[in-house]
Image (cartoon, rainbow, N blue to C red; front, side, top):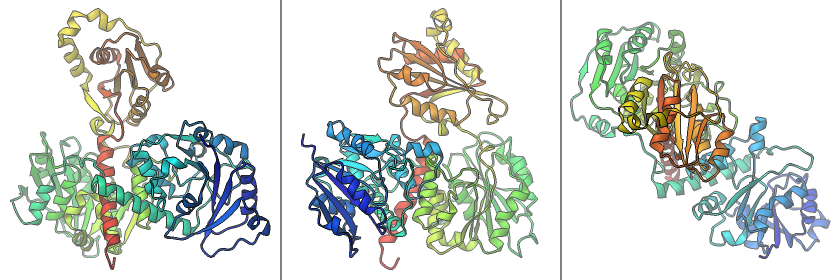
Length: 624
């Protein structure tokens, strides 16, 4: 192939290192060096302007540096480097090798060493992570075409419009472009990302919005992600004043705490008979005008307990889906202050009070401040990255990962009337509407709700097959004719390695075993195991059956208990072997080929994409 090289050097507003960067670039023996400078900015070096290999072009907000360079470039390989950073030339030569050898069409700078150092990147790099999440390339992490250096094979992008490099990046991914990552340091031995100027941040901000908007036009406002079965039809009926509510009235008080205003506490609940009583009793100490419990899909005594404790109870036999109960509670509420909490764990009164009093003092939306519990470092958990990314797009970066998704949170009555009770079914959308409406949104108090929050493996772990209590699972196995006819075969096996786990407080004194049966799952199993770690299992047991790829080598490095069968014994038998060797009180079987987000992550990321879609459409309208 023709390996002619064009080096492209965009720079924004500083010339401190530009001359040295260009001279270094010439050492790579390119056919040309294209310097893309801001419009109407002069370069005063005669040495540079007289060199025929150096071409100066101007860019503006209409034409991106990528677009201008692509139009001018004659080389087969386009290497983009930062005009304000000196790189080691030997590493740049290595960097472009995957393209020169035909093994790659796009090479990205590998930023993982930054993550390992714990260095905080520019907030806009969050959106590099989010875009990779949207397109199903979580393996790329925060690596993106916006990070220099990057290299392209020109023939791979000839059909693309490079005016927005993020749009082009998405199109390259959809085309199945071969992508590789490479590590590059600066010449002085430092490895960091140069801070972006305000002009750069503004430009990247617009590119991201445009690219995500185009993506959502194709995929739909939720990016083709499920909403988890939300009963939005019920909210539409309430909005249209249709259909009766199965509601029993409770009691409350007019408190002197809130400057003459009334407090409504809203609690959605499903099968929470073990905790709802304590939650209500703790809430009473706030002297609310009413406590509203929206019970849905319950088969226990949650509603009965709530009624006996004087709560106003709304009952639905079917499950409503996440956050729909909050919308219904807001709909029937009468208070000036609306405080939202969950039913599965009590929060102390002194931690709840600041949310209610902040509304009295002028805040319209009071959020739980979890920023110190989840520091802004990279890579963020995908849900946290979307929370932070949304606040960045709304020019509310100081909110960090503050989100209406986390309880407790509170609203003023005027804010609720502006955003509409139905919007609470999509918390991120409600947050966007409040900010667009000019309402004050603040993180007012830190309440650690991460540790006591109930873990639901079928939502938080990923592709859930089946499982349950140890007794239930073993009874099912013992009743299977395949087990009774091959009992010795199932029980006489030993793992080739023992793994590690932890004693968790998440399961009310019980411990969890995760069983993963796998065959040729090298591409996905590490992601599955890493997700399983997040819900604190006592052990993760992997049983390999008839694998012919390198799944075994991948798994051995991940600290799990591992059984290996060279012959194919079948996934069902592999699960049985894992369960029979397990020690946990709860057993969960997980699919080794699970890709992408868990059901909970899909729902929450979909909510954020819906909010972003709304924001983009509003932004495009005149006078907005």
